[in-house]
Image (cartoon, rainbow, N blue to C red; front, side, top):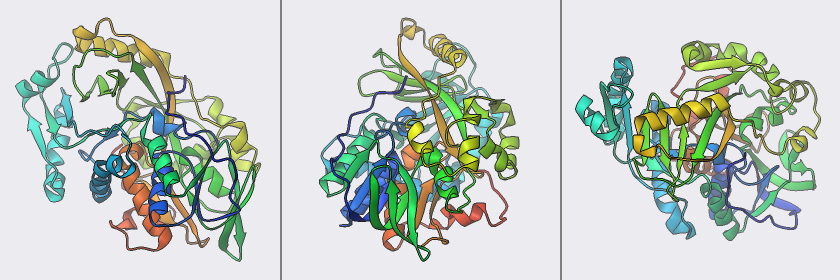
Length: 440
């Protein structure tokens, strides 16, 4: 079952021409549309399904700086600053709250890795406190495991996946953008190596620039124009409960991850429990992803599913230029792993006995698009003037979404970037540079 998302109404007419077309209505695409519109550019936002229909509504909703790869830290700081201001600017609540994040563990090696991150916290001014065993037990009960310690990331928090991207989309529209759902982008219109527009299932939109923020579909969309973007997706499972008692706002331990929603329900999952589905695109980029696969071998299950034959990484996506691929699969909506759903509930109730009567409202699967180094791509595409890419967020996209959208808008308009964008260039993944795997 797809998560419930606040509905956004599409604009009736497709514009003949705009300054920028944004492909993809997730958190990155809507944020980019908002910040581009705020700069006075005319923008058309395209989404083949509906706003936030894929990963942006299936996320845990975490907005964190803690434990990020140092390459992402300036972008994370920027994003948190933007999260702080968005509700006031747009006049609608995105559910953003700086509630703090609490982590506990019974694994000494994991605790040591958190301790080792403290120099990064000091460098970037992040308030985070290590917890000893008794302090950890005060925050998360030791009913299943004996904690060796934990940490409290004070200024991190959460936002509402059902609201964030829709509110950003409406914010963009209030500034002049148009929104077009059930309107798949099919191909770029290119003249003499430069973007001149985009072909959609409803017709051509002329434009000087295109930002591809298409999530798991980005590599497939770009491939037909000769652009190589190493990208692979993993499948996750999460669930949402019905409203229940409050046992904490944002919680992590080896058995579970929990985020309290605005209505008093919880989003629940188990960190790291993902399935890597064997697909033609995955096989194509297997060399690039091998370092990451080896590093995470113990946490990843490998399987074969319908993704081999349908969707953005399938045989037809890899070997055909059929634009109908984007309309035949409007929304990636994989089934949740039922065994994992049961494990999540057992772990939660085992840790918090007061939740013994908790009920599941719905559960879902999700595809998380990754890069070989687990760091997003936010980059101009040198081969085609006017083309930009913002994808491969590797499970970090929701919290980083406003910052990625803001940086994308700066790159599209040629403004001086607020952060060093060199870490996010596409070229690092295709020029033979050594892959340094970040944290998922």
